[in-house]
Image 1 (cartoon, helix red, strand yellow):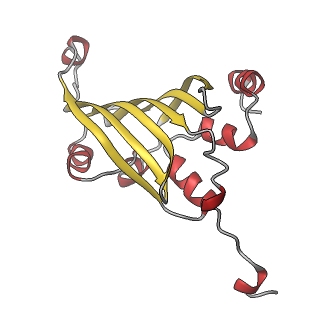
Image 2 (cartoon, rainbow, N blue to C red):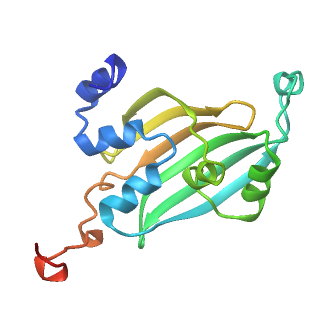
Length: 174
């Protein structure tokens, strides 16, 4: 399956197949939800605060241009399905500009430069409403890296009012 850690989480958290997909998404979560619900995902940046560089960041041979504490909410229609809290270290001028001027999700940011990050899942669990949360890192060496906690609503995969129904009359038959 997904490796022993993913298998352990699947069993201990009783993850559904859709939750396992969300658990292992690496920069494409918006696309997965958009495809599932056949609707666009709206990303609302609630907080983006520029932080002071840590002493360890300052000592790096290539220190980040900027470090942000960032919070976003993701919506399908009027329904919020995910809150993401993130520490972002930016080493690239183009990505810095995008973060400063646009409300972009992490996946959109990575696609700007066709980046495939190294994904590391650190932990996951269940929230009080039955939703799943995950803590992970993504690293695009020398360009941008992220430490992210995402909290999914209990109905993230079951927002019935959001699902589109396609009838056979809407498309040609073969």
